[in-house]
Image (cartoon, rainbow, N blue to C red; front, side, top):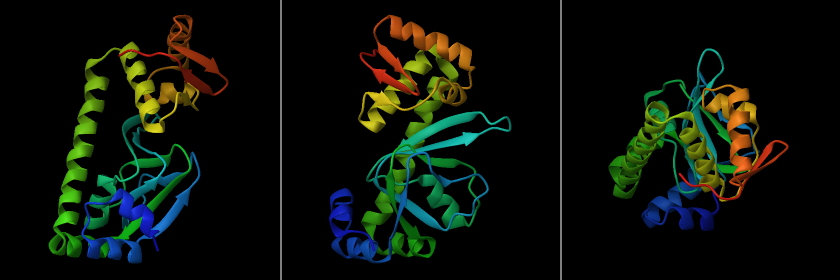
Length: 213
């Protein structure tokens, strides 16, 4: 059962009756940082709502390169988990906790029922699809139309915003995988940022000092 305080704080738009249902049937699951919530090919049986933490949603190509899609924060839901669960499809994406994360799993069989019965749930689902679509467009814009320098700055700013921290635990290899580049190129660009005083480089961690897009 989900805690009443968390659901009431994060999902204030839900009707009192719906909030009560969410608290009764929602299964709270906890994931450690770097732990996977969802992997390609996995059967999805519930919609995922974020209670705490940050989740990175991405795809992986045949060579193991990651393509970042968007991050999920408390009060948000994974649109792809909703779609896969409702249509009984296996996942085509991967989801990983960036920090210790807590989610609420809503059984798939309740999604259609709630959409018909509760207007707030119906609107929440629509808003989830709209928000994730806009975030995908933003990601596509940076991948397709920006050079690597700009994409790297965007990547760092996205993580700074998502984690609400100037310290990002990552490596040049991880960044290269996400930006579809090489470790050597990312290393060179990061060192340039460090020389300009924009970042400070630590072992497996980047400290953001001052970044401008």
